[in-house]
Length: 130
Image (tube, rainbow, N blue to C red):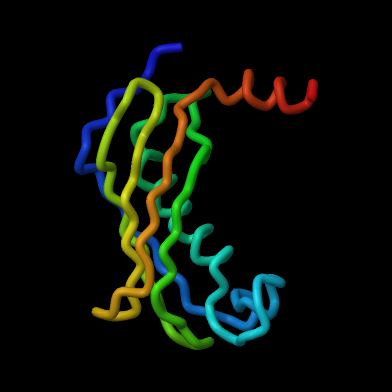
């Protein structure tokens, strides 16, 4: 497998308007009607996937292997949040991203996501053999 070249500084941004389905109540991660941490993490991961998507050759993908979330402020239904992922470090096949999630100018969360570059078919085959 030939690894694509990723350089620190690579970025991508994704957005989400919070709906009832995105809340802690709906996700079972709490009982409040605000953006749930699991959905916030999924948004952060989506930003990391978007950052690498254009540079991945066919048959190669990345998977999340570690995440650290600091969810600082609640975001109610109807608000729009954006997640900006920045590739901070490349260590062989490991990619470390720092993601900032904001509601306008307000910092909602900081997330560190580590992803691994791998052969997509081999990964799926391994999962099916488990």
